[in-house]
Image (cartoon, rainbow, N blue to C red):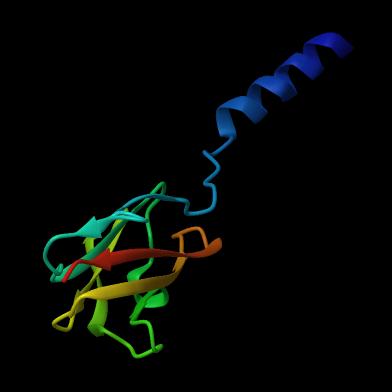
Length: 118
């Protein structure tokens, strides 16, 4: 009888369990990390491993002097991706700083660089 009760409890735990979400890991970005572009991009788009809360996520793009080169608020592209518009970028190296809040409230952050050729 005790064995049957244990099996019943384990079975109910499996049936009632909900999927666990993980931290929002950056899967890919456009422009991609470390890339050198022939022409300046108009936006930065970031795709994450889980759904993101755009109101609580940030993408900041800075030039070599630390000036902000992004323009406007972060917007949702779809559930797992966010984007931000850019100012007109001259040739140079740019750093993208980001932090994201997943819909289950886990925070993640990172940075990467890309360059625009003259």
